Image (tube, rainbow, N blue to C red; front, side, top):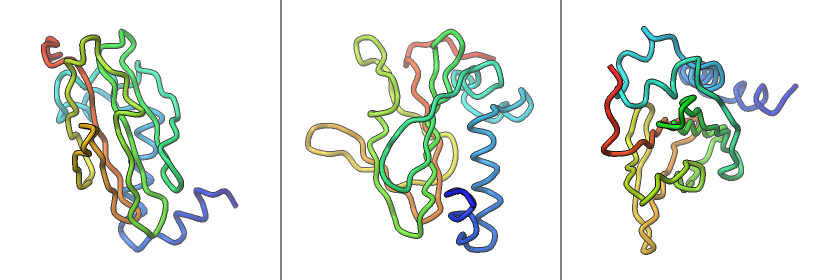
Amino acid sequence: MTTLDTAVTTIPNGRSDKLIGSLRSAVLGLSPSQSADFHPSARAALEAGGSFRPVSLGEGIWAGVRSAADGSAHVLFAHNLTAMPVSFTPGEALPEEPGGAAQLYFLAGASASSTESTGATVSELEPHGFVWLARFSADAEPRL
């Protein structure tokens, strides 16, 4: 049994389907009809033409970043596989835009966010929770 299998078997009823669906979408991408509800600038990273790479955000967090083929957008998928709240810093996994002009955008899931004295954003996930966050240039042309 894998670590993911073990984690999923301990997830309360109703949450496992959402978590599994989110994990699948993170790795495989979304169809254009599935991504239609997301911010236009994030769609290129969400759809199947983008790339995926796993990232490390800490113990108990399964995370990865999908990036648009042209590098114009990046989406961080963070999934808490534990029965305890976990915290992470999204900026550690998402590429910075030149000049620091990019912002973080919430796409799906749930997390509580705060700002450290250094200015870094910290996100907290509930047990078995997940969040999708995007970063793209604020002046990027929206993709329609």
